[in-house]
Length: 138
Image (cartoon, rainbow, N blue to C red; front, side, top):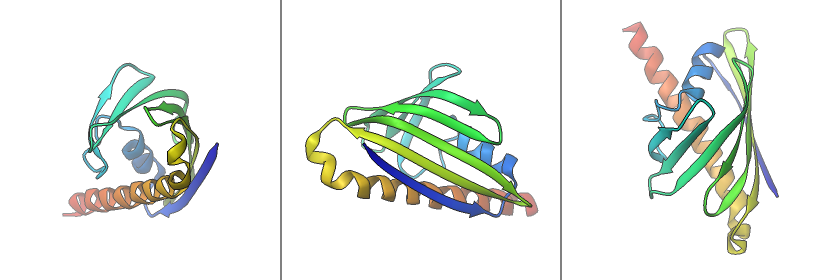
């Protein structure tokens, strides 16, 4: 199992950050996705730009606090946990992925890939929130 974590403090209130991260239908700010599909209250599928589907099942959903789910695609399986902490007018996010590889030849690159994906997610999230905030001010 490979574990990858990332943490960031975002200068936005916790409700804004929580909503952006958990609104599966609003995926357009994610540069790594082509589309998403909500299957029911607990399950959804994300499609990477290359068309690869990843299936998710929510296991914990505590608004403005914690979101956890299992994930699976043809190459990996595992779980993701997002912790959200209010810090004044900012929000601290801490995301952890615990991944098991299905294809042994991916093992040498998986840690690097997960880290890159987590950094991209934070970068896309920051850009989206900044754009959203600037629209509200204009």
